[in-house]
Image (cartoon, rainbow, N blue to C red):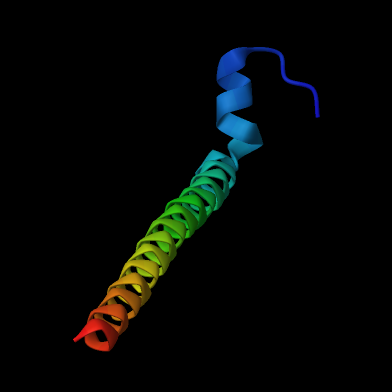
Length: 68
């Protein structure tokens, strides 16, 4: 589609409301997906770190029990 001016481009041939809403919804969904993925990654990394620390504490407690 060819536009004569930038304002014609923004008007999208009279369908600007629908076109820009679709772009906005798509951008919002992608942004939400990225943020959600980063939060999940952060939460899983923290859970793994806590699990490793817990296992280390259990091993140290077992060693302490064996020395008593």
